[in-house]
Length: 50
Image (tube, rainbow, N blue to C red; front, top):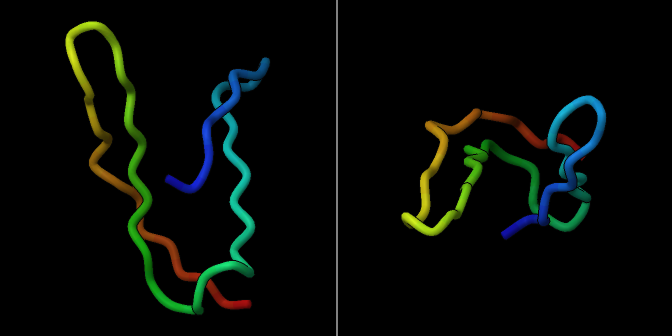
């Protein structure tokens, strides 16, 4: 887990300090959990270049 998101006026926000991971390609997914279980997003591809 990178972080726990916080609900804001603009939607859900999650800050990730990318200096803690090597440069490269990653796929970020979000997970929502409720009484029925977990649901995951399809993911977003990103490239880290520190």
